[in-house]
Length: 250
Ligand SMILES: [Zn+2]
Image 1 (cartoon, rainbow, N blue to C red):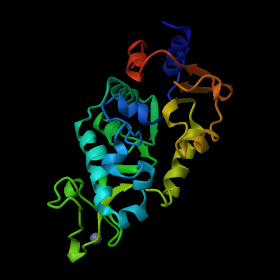
Image 2 (image 1 turned 135 degrees about the horizontal axis):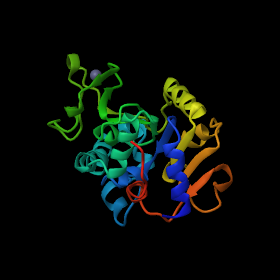
Image 3 (image 1 turned 180 degrees about the horizontal axis):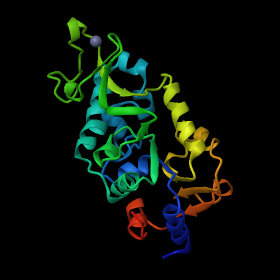
């Protein structure tokens, strides 16, 4: 075992106040690829870039392309995804009373599927739907079971779009949720951070609240964030690879 993993094991076994921040790489291990990444031919199919599509104004103007992108690139892969061993390890750490919270920029509900309970979904969740006009949360099945490509709200003949309850571009974040996440980070002893979340709002802001000395960064580019970390783990494989090498007292 490389020495970084030995230190990680010691810190995890020595703490009952672990908080973990997860990002796209964590979901990738569960078989849910990062929908923001454009492969060759992407623009031929979807015409617009992901960051342009995932905006409120885009949904209003081009609902067909919004739902096409959402169904094909987000919803279908999410339904195929299964929690990875790393997701299961986090759930077990929580059940053992060691891990206090998962703060995630992922919107796929995979942590909950692995039985994690205290998951703060900083950017919302595709597992919930929402109608902006009636301001009601609606069943998950609304979009997958919609008879038309565009999903319309049928509450009291409303007729507006039913959309996933995720934070789209141009929309404000839930300030109560951010405050809750900030508090979790502030009071955490060991803070684990998936490097792929580092560039995604609000993660960089959350890190500023951390007051401990056991910040563990996974798979961040060398040197960029090293000075703020107590430990950098890189080159040790996926989260599932890393956790499988640890002897955790659970
Ligand atoms: Zn409605």
